[in-house]
Image (spheres, rainbow, N blue to C red):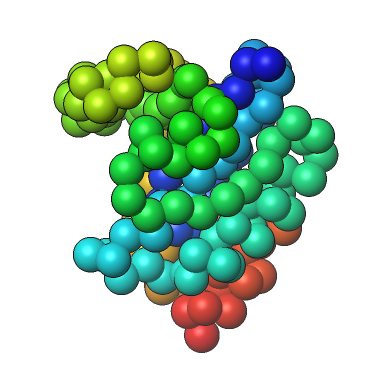
Length: 158
């Protein structure tokens, strides 16, 4: 069975993230979306909310599951019997950082590969931080995040 993990903060999940998940679900038998709980960051949404958002917008994908983790990504991948880490890329800057992380992960777990996926060009400008900033100004989120979660994002900023 080919299992991959797709890690991230997903604070909140965007249409770009969802695009990567949907495409990865066609390549792998199972995709585990790993929501990072980072003690050094102050997310806008709790890890439970972020997991719930992802589960709701991926319910049409039978081979996708969501879990959260803290600590090393390679340990999370091992826990889920995954030997591929998926990283979505929007820009060259994303690649430079993710390339370094891929080399580190390969050092920590030599049997784990990193697969880079370019986001669809129509989503290449979207980031979770942009979504949060726009939501704070009561901007239109309809092109940025899945429709199922717009109301809750807007509610967070009332």
